[in-house]
Length: 203
Image (tube, rainbow, N blue to C red; front, side, top):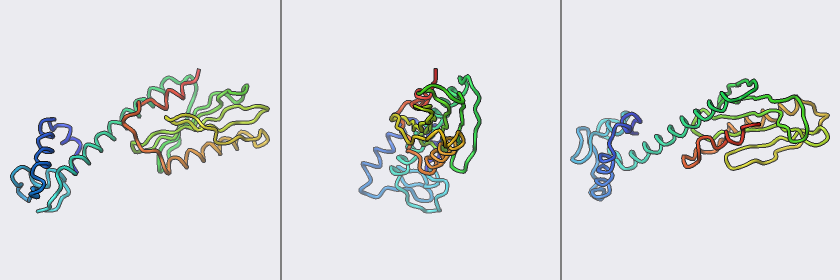
């Protein structure tokens, strides 16, 4: 696979020329040999791990590298949006590190009127996938609503009886966060980097 540093330094003209060559001469099986072959460089340039004499599909390698570059950029922008959100919090938060990602726990209030946000559990994958938040909100008659927040919207996940206690609500939220990190939603470069953060800005 093309390395990201190499791709970043390639001019758009060079990329276009490579793609044009692949499309034009692909029927003749133009590919790189150990020393290069006409239009294409040696296979090791496209993929440093390629074995000597390997025959690679330049167009497929370039498309794969472009996809990786977009995902890395989406991840960097997502992380910057997370940092900006955390920096603007007016309350304390903690971070729990899991094998699959990080969970930011933000506590706003121990109790409140119906609709009051008590806590947010924000699951952030280590990869470029989208983050997801589980919000604990005060419901009617002391109940606690467990809400799921994503870039697509908000959905009620559970309604907990007040007799269950605060710890039960936190355990439920953490369980949901861990489950999401096991199968996170794929990154979408078309979405704003702060698509979840705007939903988490509390008054």
